[in-house]
Amino acid sequence: MSASITLEQVTKSYGSHLASDDVSLEIGAGRFVTLLGPSGSGKTTLLMMIAGFVRPTKGRILAGGRDITNEPPERREFGMVFQGYALFPNMTVAENLAFPLKLRGVARETVDKEVRRMLDVVHLPGLGGRYPRELSGGQQQRVALARALIFNPKVLLLDESLSALDKKLRAGLQEELRDLHARLGTTFVFVTHDQEEALSMSDEIVIVNRGRIVQRGAPKALYDRPDTRFVADFLGRANFIEGAVTTLSDREVAYSAGGLSLRHALRADGATPQPAQPILLGLRPEKLRLASEAPGATENAVPAEITLVTYEGADYHIRAKTPLGSMQAVVASTGGGASPARGDKVWLSWDQDAAVVLRDDR
Image (spheres, rainbow, N blue to C red):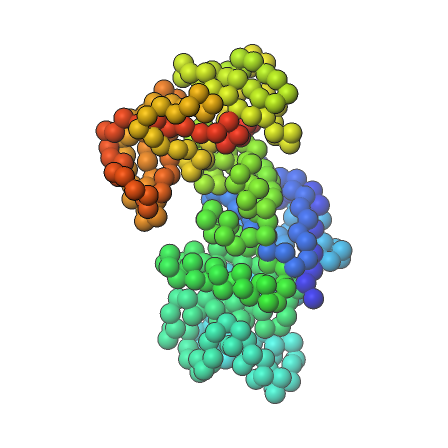
């Protein structure tokens, strides 16, 4: 049975440095939650405090409502998968998997049965007699996962556990991890700095920066509606439009930027700009349309000159010089017509509800 994890005003300081700063977080039982942030943001410190390897300076940590703040790691009964796998090189795969069960005094016949079961779960049947050095990186990662799960932990903690793999193998294991989570129902807490990985795998993403949680939510909600410049910039590509509010109504704001008059449709749950004040908007590249002629007056549009075209298979990633500064757009490569090229004079346009008003947290 999985367990919830609760952090209550957790702080961890190393001298004057706050690795974690008054963090409160609820992770629901059975959820796949990713702690995402840049290097040095404090996400791994949070994971290590949940695991019990680091003790908070202040605050409490609870598992299923039980205070575990001062319990050692072995008392917490959490599974843990490290970035470097941490397999015992002098033990076979089967012996690595059996180790957590033997520590718990499980009968030998049960150990053998569970080892076979877990090898099937991670799609490694018949490899129990091999040593870690005889396995590929992806196979070693599966063994590490199996060893962490074999004693049915209520929580599985994963610290950058896919980062050492190549892109194709990592993508395959991401799918397997999601499938494993769906089948087992264990609470997964995953740490990564890889935005695509977080978006593709998580039920919920918790974005961490400078030791604090800056925003949390479902992947699509965070991507579509970031609160701040940092979140919009860190979680995928973004264009930033800095302007000044000219008129404001309940439904839309008119603003000037780069000598142009533009409009933005307001959302009831979004940030509210102020009259005659600066405004910052974030606009995802895939929200932009590219055309050779100026679009209709109902759309926001800017003249542009393409400065860079990158072919990415299904899409072209385009950079262009505009009155708003350098902008990037993503357009499909599968349509008809000529391919975009450097030096092309084009128009970039977007719907009035395509952007989002941001708080500038620089």
